[in-house]
Length: 117
Image (cartoon, rainbow, N blue to C red; front, side, top):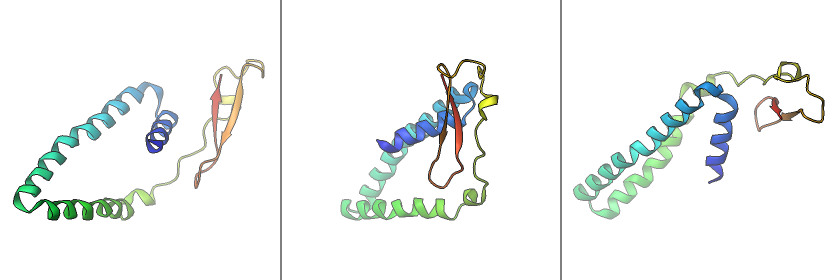
């Protein structure tokens, strides 16, 4: 549950607003679209092997997903850049009582600025 909140917050912060609908739809399609494939694979494993062996095979597959991410090229990509400066925020001419800029520091990332109204 917490992971979903973090993922959604990250997507909303880094995705341009005009592409956020496409990103959300694509993410949902990939996440929910693979559920039937997993059910078919689980049923096939349970049919070919006994259920205990099928469960052990799927349990062994979970760390493999982490290894794929660990050795993928995404680790070599540069970190995300800082967000907008207070002068770049739309409506920066609004009095301070109506506009605030918050610096967000996430673990392992550069501080980012977000505009809030």
